[in-house]
Length: 136
Image (tube, rainbow, N blue to C red; front, side, top):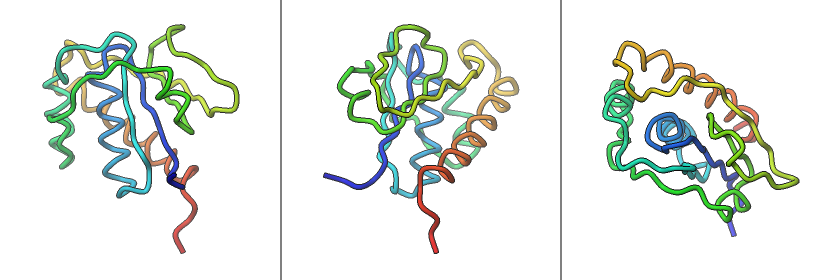
C-alpha cells in the first residue's frame, strides 16, 4: 500500500490531453504522485503533435499507449480528472472529481496545441499544490 496520492486523467481517446497531463504530473511531482490515464474510446497511438509539444518542454510521452479507462482504475484513484469524456466516465462517491474543459488537440497544428499544453501545465501545477503536502 502506498501513501502517494493517485491521480487518473481521462479523455476520450487517451491520445492527447490526458497523456500530456499525465506527462506533466509525472515530471512535476518527481514521483510523489501515482499517475494513471485512460480513455473511454482509446485511440491507436499518441497524437504526434502532443508528443512534439511536450518534447519542447523536455517531457517525452512518445512511449505512452492509449489505454481503456477501467472502473477499477477510477475506484483506485484519489483524484479523477476528466477532459471531455462526458457521461461515459463512471462516478464513485468519495472521490475528488474535476472536469477540465480543454480543446482536443486532435487535428490541430503545433501552434494551436501549445496553448492547450500550457493550460494543462498550469492546471497540473495548481493541482499539485493542493494534493501534496508542503515540502518544508
